[in-house]
Image (cartoon, rainbow, N blue to C red; front, side, top):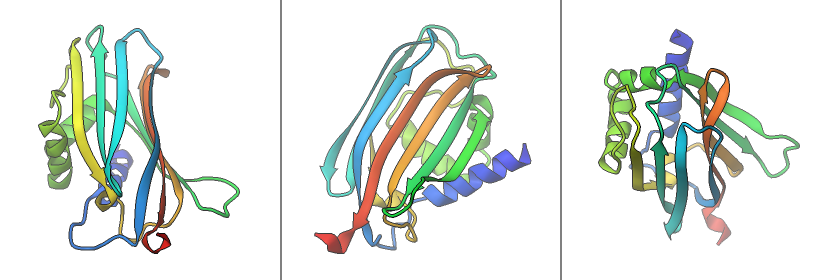
Length: 184
């Protein structure tokens, strides 16, 4: 359990925006997908819209047909692949209970800030149970500032997979690339 919490803190540090430093690269989101595999999720819709160079707005809408089981987990996976690499590199891979994740948000100031920003753009609950209803996350802005300053030029894949008793419930995936700012 401690390992999961430590990994989660490392992820947050990796994704924590740094306003003071400029990134030597731009980001391009090429594909956003979401898929439902279980009747728990009646409806699932996701999209993104480019607002400017390296700046995107993301939205997700989903309807639960029943209360989400308390043991539902979310797997967070980040993979990158540089131009000359033969394979992608898994840089982050963790699976944690959705309810535990919501509980820990209140204990870690940085996590609380990020989830607080998400909360401003959604009607997601801040604790379990997550009841049957329509949820939306609207126009959450993601820019190059969320990437680490020491990031590299590479293709990337970020995914969230919701799992209930080893059965996939739904996935959300963002695929994109980074490229040097001096390129254009």
